[in-house]
Amino acid sequence: MTVDGYKARIEYDAETDSFRGEILGLNGGADFHGRTPKELRQEFRRSLAVFVEVCREKGIEPRRSYSGKFNLRIPPVLHERLSLAAQAADKSINAFAQEALELRIAERR
Image 1 (cartoon, rainbow, N blue to C red):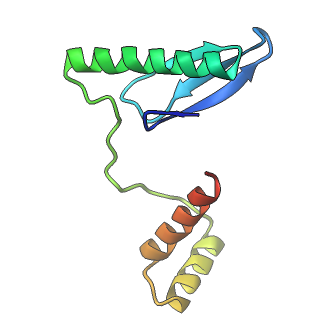
Image 2: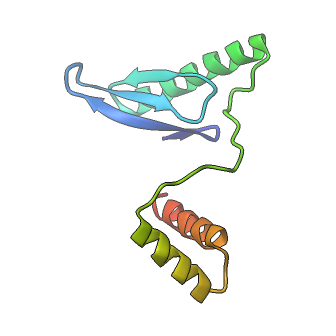
């Protein structure tokens, strides 16, 4: 679910027979609950508004910032396959892996 460019992960809670959402990519935590999609979206908007207001009051950016760097540990055999595939495409491992990640993420939309 997405509201105002913010994404949330939604899970069903069988104990309460309702859904719980967690807003992703924040400089803190914000969640919300609802029994129907309409209620869930309304609560998402409310929770997000409260979170953004608290951040504004504290002078904090609501969205988490990212450096663009991360370490990835993979099995040596996959590292070799990645390196060979990148060489065959005449690209760096970084460029090849970035394209692969972008494609995979686009598939999930």
